[in-house]
Image 1 (cartoon, rainbow, N blue to C red):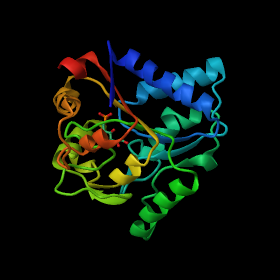
Image 2: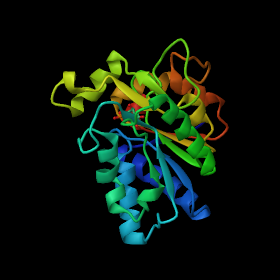
Image 3: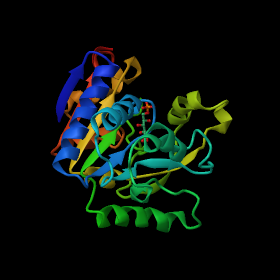
Image 4: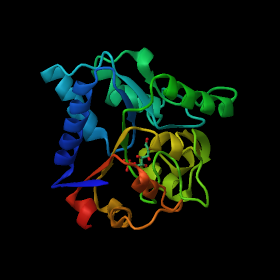
Length: 241
Ligand code: F6R
C-alpha cells in the first residue's frame, strides 16, 4: 500500500486527478470504478477542469459506481445517480451508455447484483477504482461485520453510516437504511485502487489502516492490505488528526 500525504484537500484532489489522467492516457477505453460522497468531489472537479481546459477525453471511458441507496428516486438529489450526473457526467464528454450505477429499482435485486458483477467482467474488469472510506472503515457500503460479501450485494447500513449520511438529508428518518454495493471481492478485483481520505474525522480509521498489521472484516478497508496496487492519498488532517 503506497501512502501519499498531501497538505490539504485541494492538493489531495489534484494528486488523485493526476493519477486518473495518467491512467486514462495509457488506456483510452479505461474502466473506472467511481465513488460518491464528499471525498471525491474535488477529484471530480479537477477532472472536469482537465476536460474543459486541457481536453481530457472521456468518450471511450466506461464507469461503474460502487453503490446506490435502495428506495430512493433517481431525481432525488441524495441519490447517487443524481450525484454522478450533477458532479461529473453532465460536465464531461462521457457516453451515458458507458456509465453504470447499481439500479436499485429493479424487481429482482439479488439477480441484478449478480448481473452487475457479470457486466463489470464483460467490460474487461475495473482498471482503476476510486474509493472513499467511512469513519467505521467501510468501503463502498461494505460495513464492519463478522463476515463480508464477496460480490455485489444488498446491505443494511449501520447506525454509524446512517448518522454520517444524515448530513445530506433534512432529517435522519429520510436516510435510506439499505443499499446495493459492490462486494469486497468486486472491489479487490480492480487492477488498481486509489483510496482517498480527508479531514480529522477520518484520522482514527486511517491510523489503523496505515498501521497495516492486520486484516479484519471489522475494518473492511483493511482487506485492501492484500491488494497489490493500492495508493492511499490523505491530507494532513486525516494523517495527523
Ligand atoms: C460512496 C461510498 C462510501 C463513501 C464513504 C465516505 O460511494 O461508497 O463508502 O466513500 O462513506 O464518504 P464521504 O466521502 O462522504 O466521507
